[in-house]
Length: 113
Image (cartoon, rainbow, N blue to C red):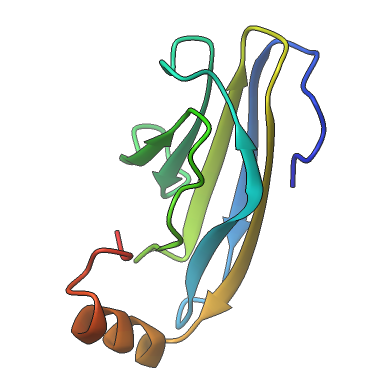
């Protein structure tokens, strides 16, 4: 989704929409590098598209985040680039409720938000 260096400052937002009976699953490629302290560059996952929708995860640093499955069919991914350097690539897919049940029983919810 954003595999190139970011030279522009400011927030960039992508909205993911899946059918109501499906859930977005977000995963990350091996390349992941943003500000280690989250001060100038970070990625925020927001569940919902309305003003005031809850932020469910904030990512920064060089460690690749674990995949997540969100419980809402509408998700925002907000990338803030403030220092002119960040590389990351995100993939997403729509999964059904049986996928959620497998996550809940096999990982006790560690990969699901």
